[in-house]
Image 1 (cartoon, rainbow, N blue to C red):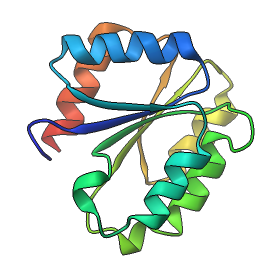
Image 2 (cartoon, helix red, strand yellow; image 1 turned 120 degrees about the horizontal axis):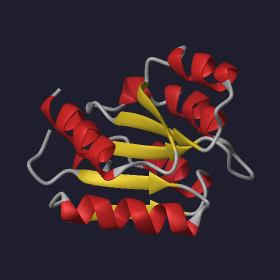
Image 3 (cartoon, rainbow, N blue to C red; image 1 turned 90 degrees about the vertical axis):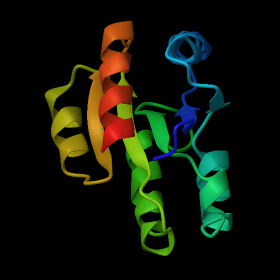
Image 4 (spheres, rainbow, N blue to C red; image 1 turned 180 degrees about the horizontal axis):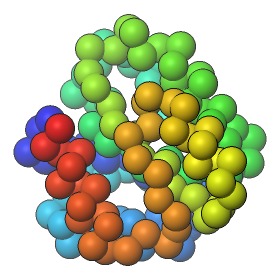
Length: 134
């Protein structure tokens, strides 16, 4: 993964996005793009499977969003992953403490980690260290 990873935050909660961006900038991340829902980023990925430099290295994905929730995003993402010559790490973020959501998230190999919001700075630091070094 690149030294300056491209990070996408897909979340409909503006406060969560603000906190994430602030923490990521404190961790020296400079290429951060946020989306209010998962439709636009999914379409971008589908339309740009060969534009590796424009695709994210890490996606922080909210589970509960209107229109297309996090699990639906993953299911649609799975349809194009074989066409992408890049490993995109997906970290699921949610305010849900529902054990069933955790189990479903674990069933998707594309989801590298699952965290309850609000994410703590030290947890984000650990995530970034793991995601950038694997």
